[in-house]
Image: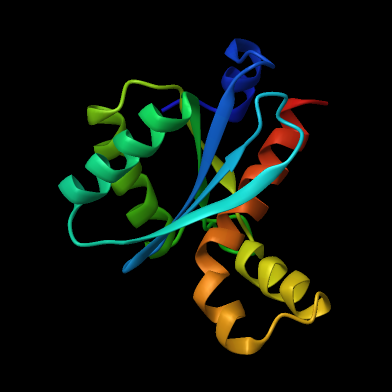
Length: 151
């Protein structure tokens, strides 16, 4: 696991990245284009166990030529780490043991709220909004990270 600053120093502007919103039951996955200009909601993975999650991530990575992973870190509003943040760090470390790609945590405060609000403004119905919230939150996370990386 590296910091976003280390990721920025090492990363190329011609690679695809995935963003992950790690939940207890569902994992939102987003992907960006090779120019890293736009993050797109990609898929929601129903988490069965860590091995199944890693296998599904490896499949996504291989099929889409992904070269880096941005993982949302749900730190508290005051900047401290809570139980959710520690859980994300634990899962991220398990992923890092099995997937040899640059990986970093990105502050995801309000990403789910932001994704929900955007879909509300786009007049998406509530059922679809709730169904897609995880992958939309992952896109919100990844977009924030690629905006940072490209500036």
